[in-house]
Length: 424
Image (cartoon, rainbow, N blue to C red):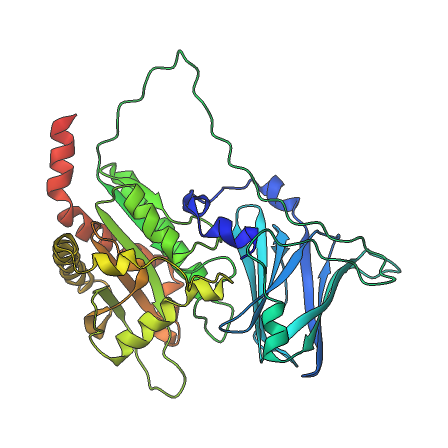
């Protein structure tokens, strides 16, 4: 796996998402257009930029993918870019994968190799470009082209290209601020920790409507409003798995809650019913179980559990200790608390939010597999339903739904809050 992917799968991904000033955002290279040309034998991808950028490309299998890692880029591509492919490229996704780094992930129609990749400087009124050429190959050739277990090598420029060879993307270093020796120690914050997890992000858009509204943005707006409501009350220490458009692995989302010794983990999502499967609407609250409560819950869990593959990470060799923990008594107790919060939330939602006809469900969501943190996954609505979509995009609806969720959290953590207050 390439260095960038390794960073995403380690502790670096658990850090709070970096906040950028408008001035810093304006300094990022801008990607203005993307095109795919060719056929099933040879396919070319072209990305228009306002300046050349370093990059590296590598292959992943199961399923066949190409990953293109770049420094952080401001993607201003036309609406719907990447949803329809051509030739060897079935579709592609793009976005920020970590502070300082962006990624484009290409889903392929079959085995292929990177025949060429290079950058072109702006010339003759044409923008700077990044070019990626793919070539159809057999499975054995594809296997030999997979990323080595180590840092990816820089890409080479095409013969005669005006751009320079692209060096490997440097990974931003984490700088730890050391307080001066004379600084007085800060008293420990004993308030219970609530971790809010907006689903998807960065290269992973999640579900999306026929228009411009996509899940990762809808749930981030909801999560930020919930954070503001909880922080205003002052009863909790609120931790976000992401607070901007950043890709976070499923393992890192779980690790945030564990490392913070969270009292509650709430993952926010928005579902979509596949075309041809009828109509559904309303909020649904999911808890963890080894066996899905119904076919829809199983389908959703399988979809959400593919988030790491969508982000371009190959986690098939991930340790199985989490699965082993599920049989432990502590996990059973945690599930009891998770179910209690789910029922409290359903009760609060009844008066303000339209609920799904079966509002309480369970399935094997990876993001809920925390041995000692009560965890729920809340689908606040269906982007495939117009009424739900209008609600999720409405500030007024969001405020009511957030208040209901805040009240459920208040009731669930009342004893913990009282205990923390008594200790201060």
